[in-house]
Length: 171
Image (tube, rainbow, N blue to C red; front, top):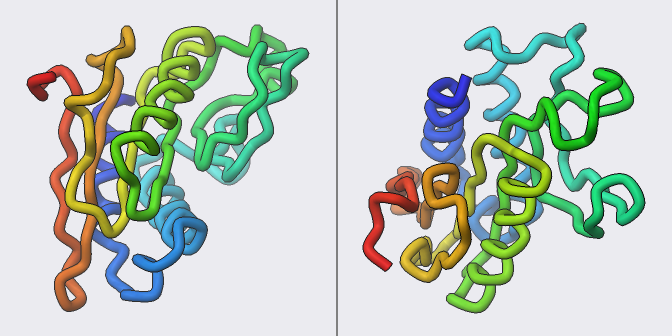
């Protein structure tokens, strides 16, 4: 499953090629979501009538999740469908930042670390839009093997990015 999620993330990063989407975080996240869902459907990791879903800005609440945050995109089976604890059936979480700097990245890393640890998401992605750095070297959390990052830019209509795993980055 993880390999398919990573491959689909790469597909989505390479598919967003309209300059408008590189000027707003929400716009980029929305079109990325489209390509992500399409890719997961094509790889049979998602079905329109299954329990696993991809959600945008899903509200994590204090009572159920022990945190109050709104991740940009998550791929999971909701606990109310699975009848399992909230820390099960969590596949991946994506955080987007437009022109993010080191403090922005570190803030998102802290949130992703909670999702990867306490809520047991299998993969986390930090996508820095229209930026030159993924800041993975600044990550100080416990889940290097689960965290990926990319700085994505547009040259003409060609997306330029490298998706890296945090464990491969010196920090």
